[in-house]
Length: 405
Image 1 (cartoon, rainbow, N blue to C red):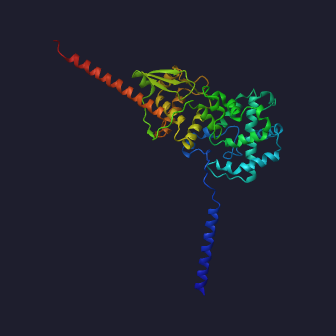
Image 2: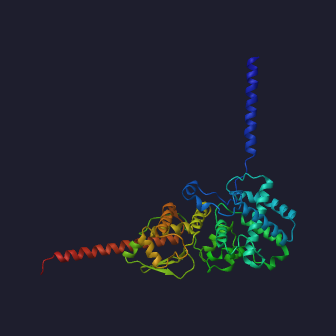
Image 3: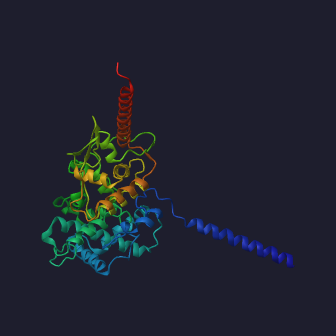
C-alpha cells in the first residue's frame, strides 16, 4: 500500500509539473515583429546614464510615472485641451486606442508590465500631449498665457522637452500618435499640417534643409527619434555594401594636416556630405548645443538596435572621434568652423572626451561604403606623403655624403 501511495504522489507531482509548464508556455507573448523601441544597453547606461534619462517629461512605458508631478499635471491639462479641439468624445478615443493596444505593445522590446487600463490611459495621455504640444508650437496664439512649457522666462523648458522627446527609451510608436491625430480631427485634417510636418516644425532647427518635402512629410518613421534621424540623412542615400567592412582608425586631424591635408568647411547642410579630393577634406559644420551629447548617444544607441546595416550616425561620430584626439585637433576643426561651439557649454577638453568616447564605443564594421572609402583614401594619402618624404630625405642624405666630383 505504501509503495502504491508513493507512486500516486509521484504521478500527481508529475501532472502538476506538466500543467505548470504548459500554463507558462501559454502565457508567452509572440515575438515582436514590429519591435522598434528599445531599452539602452547596460554598458552605455553605466557610463552615460544621464544622457538617456528624461529631465522634464516621460513618454511611453519605460519611464512611466517617473516624471515631475507638475509636468504630469500639465500632460493631463493638455489632454483636456486636446479633447476640446477634437470631433470625438473621450469614450471614442479610448475605444480607438484599445483597438491599437496589441500592435502598440509589440513595438516595445521589453514586456510592458502595465495593466490594460493603465496602458490605454498612458497612451492616450502621452499621445494627446505630443499632438497638443506640436499644435501649440505651430499656433502660438492658442497657448495659455501661463503655459509652463512655452514660458518665455523659462526658455530652458522647451529645450528640455525637445531633448526628452529625442530619447531612445522615451517614445510612443509613431503610428499610434498619427492614428490618434487623424481619428480626433477627422474632417478638419485638411485645415491642419500633417503630424510629421508639425513634428518637423518642433525639431526644425536640427533638420537637413536640403531634404525634399516628400522625404520630410511622407516618410514611414517608427517614432520621433527615428524621424529625427531620417531628416538628417542625405537626400540621395547610397545603397549599403553587401558585406560589412572593418572600420580602421585614421590619423588624427593634426597628423593629416602635417601630411598636407587641407581642412575646409563644406557648404553642404547635410552632416554626412563629407568629401576628400586632391588633398582637401571637406566636412559640413556641426553645431554643438547643450543637448548634443544626449542626442548623439541616443541616436547611435538606436542605430545599434535598429539600423545596424545603415549606421550613418555611428560612422559619423566614429570618424570625428578618430580626427579629434588632442587639443590641437579640436582647435584645428574649431578654427576651420567644422565644429561650431558658439552655443555649447563645454570646453576643448570636453569636446575631446565626447568624440573620443564615440571613437572607442563604435562597432568594428560598417556597410556604409561612403565613410569606408573616405577612410581608405585618407590613409592612402597619409602613407604616400610620408613615404615620399622618407625617399626625399634619404636621397638628400645620400647626396650630402658623396665626395665632390
